[in-house]
Length: 153
Ligand code: CTP
Ligand code: ZN
Image (cartoon, rainbow, N blue to C red; front, side):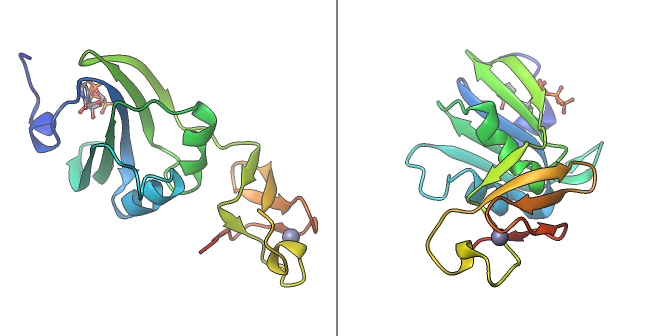
C-alpha cells in the first residue's frame, strides 16, 4: 500500500473485516463487551486514547475477517453515538456508515424497576426507545420509562 497515513501506522490497516472508528476514548472495552467480542477467537486490533482531529481522543476497533449486521452494530450507539462503521474488502473501504440509535434494545440493559419481572426471573430485558435525542427508554415488560440507562452486569 502506498500513502499509509500516520493513523494506520498506529493501528495497522486490515485486508478484510470491520473497523469501528471514533469510539469515545473511555468506551472501547464497553463496545467490545456490547458486541460480544470479549471471547472472539480471531484477530482484533484495538487502539485506545489515539489522538483524533475531530474528538481530541478516540478509540478504534478493527475486527479481522468479520462483518456484522447493522442492527448489532447499532447497539453501541448507547455508548458510542458518533462511531463510524466501516467495512473493508481487499484493503479498500467498501461501506461507511454512522451508528443509529435502534428502536428496540434487547439484553444489554437492566430495568430500574426492582419489581420488574426481568429483575426477579432470568428473562432477557427488552426496551423500546421512545426518545432518541435524550435516550429515553421504556421497559417492554413493566412499561417503566427511564432516561438514565443501566447496563446489565
Ligand atoms: N482502515 C483500515 N484498513 C484499511 C482501510 C482503512 O483499518 N484497509 C481504517 C482506517 O484506519 C480508518 C478507517 O478504516 O480508521 C476509515 O478509513 P478511511 O475512510 O480511509 O479513513 P479517514 O479518511 O481517516 O476516515 P475519517 O475521515 O472518517 O476519519
Ligand atoms: Zn421493567
